[in-house]
Length: 190
Image (cartoon, rainbow, N blue to C red; front, side, top):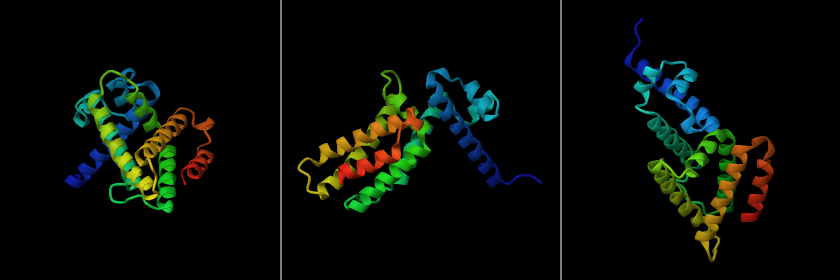
């Protein structure tokens, strides 16, 4: 029996997700420039030519991975609609951040490799900066609600500390006691 248009769309969506997942793992492990389209295609179980039906270039594939990662991050944290003004909301935010870091360590390895490179990725760095400004504003709201004298600086400190946690866990998850660190973060910032 022939497939319906919806079935074809679902198959395409699943294959696209598979390609992105495999590319993310390769990029995070070997570096963006070291991974070829051929290698990604082989890992995803498709031909190199078919890869270009899903993504026009390796750069566009990377851009889609980064956009998807930040979209997931924003959705899991649910910051777009909610303010963070209570202790409970702040603890929930930290819990969600730690959970996401644990589930997406490969994404954070890739993220750090992109932000530390001085060449290329200008559009992605701009997107990352835009996203970080959004988080700074949201976290600053929490410190404002605590009557902080320097809410923006506390938000920057908090997010910088989280970057360190993300980095440590992404690089050496077996050596990094993230749950204990989470408890210390909660204690320090509440």
